[in-house]
Amino acid sequence: MYVPLTDAPADKPLVLVKVVDPNLAIRLKRMGLFAGSEIVRLNREVLVQPIRIRGPKGDAILGGGMAMKIVVHLNDGRKLPLSEMQPGETGHIEGLTGGTGLTGALETLALKLNDRIHVVRKLPPMEYIAVIEGAGRVRLTEGMAAKIWGRMQVRLLQFVSARAGEKFQVEEILGGTRAHRMLRTRGVEPGKVLILEGVAQAQSLPVGVRNTVVISSREGLRLFLTPNEGKQILVREACTED
Image (cartoon, rainbow, N blue to C red; front, side, top):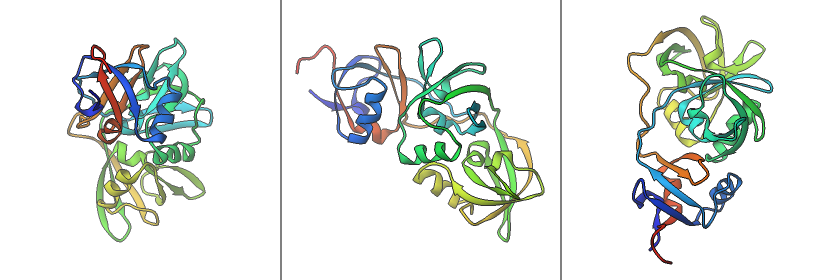
């Protein structure tokens, strides 16, 4: 019996039968997952934490949700989501489980498939306190601030790298529809001008991502998938017959 991955039992061997979404199928195939692959849906909590990496063209900060969707082939042969790498580890970007929004965000940050990256550090939960010119004050998590791309004088940079007291012209929101909607509800969108007032320690720990589907392959690859992506993957229990 075939069921969507989201309905499959956790911590039991499964066989991947079919990926309904052709774009997702291509992304998974690049990472070695296709019809017949053996996987396990893991029962685990996922924590979101921003991460600073160094790529071929400099440093970038990625929010935890974005880092979960980037798979890195480490120098020691392991394949892990970027969010699970530790400071000092190095590898190349093997693939993405996210769609065009993630691809576009990485292009803006001068990152692409096969680029070598180095994890500089994982970031503590911080809040960015800013004024939206003509609209009042806003508080942003580090992950949100990392998704805001814009111009400060002649420099293009992420808002996490903005200097306090200077005007920051928002040019782009990095990520997909959810990132755009999340920041728009806070008054942040292309064309707005932000002025950073300061950065403060957040009052809470990194939050968990609800309903994330975590899988592990027989070869040791681990992936984080959204519930919608999980529904596009049909599986059967390894002990059952077709």
